[in-house]
Image (cartoon, rainbow over all chains, first blue to last red; front, side, top):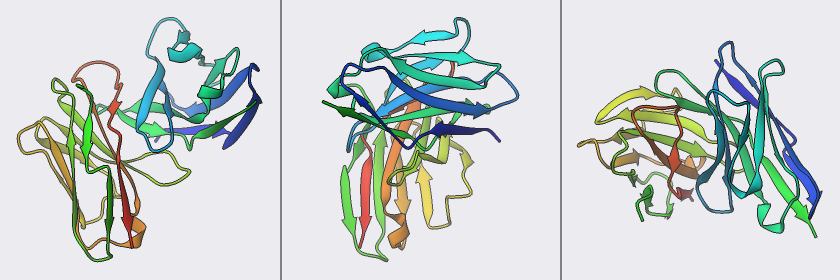
Amino acid sequence: AQSVTQLGSHVSVSEGALVLLRCNYSSSVPPYLFWYVQYPNQGLQLLLKYTTGATLVKGINGFEAEFKKSETSFHLTKPSAHMSDAAEYFCAVSEGSNYQLIWGAGTKLIIKP
Amino acid sequence: DTGVSQDPRHKITKRGQNVTFRCDPISEHNRLYWYRQTLGQGPEFLTYFQNEAQLEKSRLLSDRFSAERPKGSFSTLEIQRTEQGDSAMYLCASSLPQGTGEQFFGPGTRLTVL
């Protein structure tokens, strides 16, 4: 079975600084990869996804992620953090014919003024 | 609003009571998923429907849990004889029949069992 590891349950950056949230997965075949964001007491919103093709994918709110097969990674970045980016971020991979999502434990992004 | 909706948003119940949650997926989505999320954790898969057929259930789904999607549209998740360990956010998601598994989530139902 696949697994997803997100390094760091909490990441703190200053406003305007680079955001880097790490995600590694275990898979023997090319997966479909997703990043979702969750604001307090809300559901999950898709930020971006990798399916096939270009390995650098761009999402909403200025976020992007790069699929690196050799490293089995799909790290999320944003060049300049904004206070509104404070939320919890989840990496997920889909597996199986039912496209069930396997989730990482999440990383809480804290933005310092 | 044509997104996924869930009702109620919050439910407080006493241990031993039964509760039922409803999910209305996006209308053209035939796949529907239920997840459970506890504080500080990612969602855990509970069950999956394609149209009205329940095709997969997690081992996490004890006999006290049952889900239905009678007409292939809305779905209900019932928990019988609730326990304090059932306290969590219950998330519903839907997706198109084809494609890459991108799922659209509802706002969730937060269950508190006293």
